[in-house]
Length: 323
Ligand code: SF4
Image (cartoon, rainbow, N blue to C red):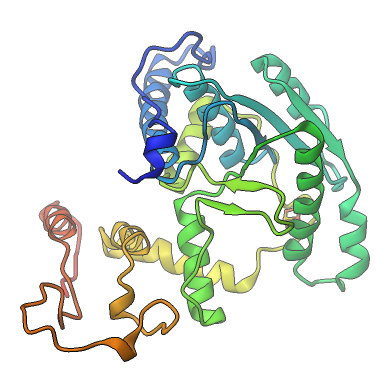
């Protein structure tokens, strides 16, 4: 638990709720049971991220950005669910930007949000035409599209008095971005759970930072969210991001425990054992005359992860390669 926990109490995922959001009313008791179980886990993970990184504080007005994809639906759903259980008050307002992609079903989100009783705002701005005009045919439009979308969302956040802008990026987005930066950008960095926006005016948060993408996909299916695809514009995901995502999926399949290890790794940085002179004063290193526990051990084995790998290796049909 970090210092951030002191000013924003950890949200208790198991506390009784005043008004729990309804599960879908399909006659599928098993699916409802599974959704309830999964929702509990997602609530716990989101509550932990909120506590660990001080994402939400008493009195916050959280703008939940809703694209119509599975991640943002889950983000909104879990935030609403936590709001009912939180030991302090905060508001959630859903915001969607209708970018005028061809075929965008403009009625879907307002209908869903009204049915959930969530305050919301739909902002309409034709960023699609701008992107089409500026990016040559066949080019990847996502970077410019996201940048324009971000600008509009920041403006809306100011207009509605939001104190936090919540985005639906999850653990696997964070890991993919980490490797994109490492492989193609020459930097150890990723999308953090909390940061100041480009314009310096807003605090952006990622409450799904601990949540696996496959759990979000399963939850979206169980909850029957009315998903709107993000490829209506016909754009393809950037090739490098696709490669990295595929690499991570293959690792997950072939080497159980590796993704978990990397996730822990980006939260456990050891500046004295990297090479960034801005983070650690190597020039000042002197012999201390006493034993240094972490001294010149370059490769630490995490016992918890080792045990998980061993446990996975003992399951039938799973091949695990040890280091
Ligand atoms: S897929 Fe289309 S709508 Fe989605 S981010 Fe890329 S360009 Fe924008």
